[in-house]
Length: 157
Image 1 (tube, rainbow, N blue to C red):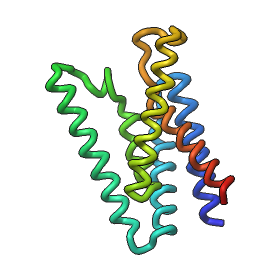
Image 2 (cartoon, helix red, strand yellow):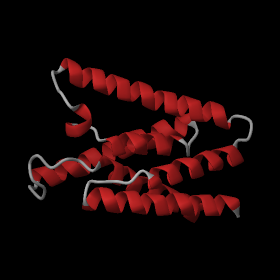
Image 3 (tube, rainbow, N blue to C red):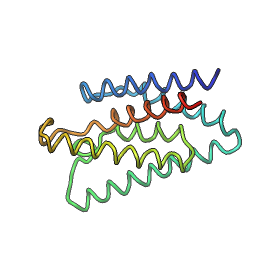
Image 4 (cartoon, helix red, strand yellow):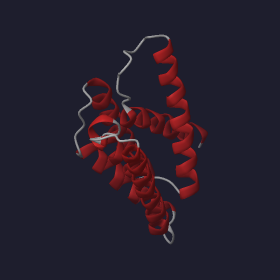
């Protein structure tokens, strides 16, 4: 019963994140906190001995990824990376999702989601459905991907 309530909290948090990110591009911190805390508890209940190792590996990997992305954009001469390229909500979403998975599953989920949404965004740009400089609502798209993943798991179990 605890697992189901944690998943429901995670799904509701993702609905909140996706709604705000796709609608207004401004996101509150509360849904990220709910998603991250419920994910950490879920990970603890699923893997009581290894949960903190998984959490540290995932969060450390996200930190390294953000550092590398920041360095790459800096070398290209970009300024205001958090304002122009990668939003603070996107970084919070990476960290919140890292609390839900074992490391191998997290990076598989993350990679698959990024590839799918890059393809969808590319098709929308090619068909000119979106304006040319429309910023990618990455946190909202990752939230949708997580909802699809969790609902798929619920249907399988």
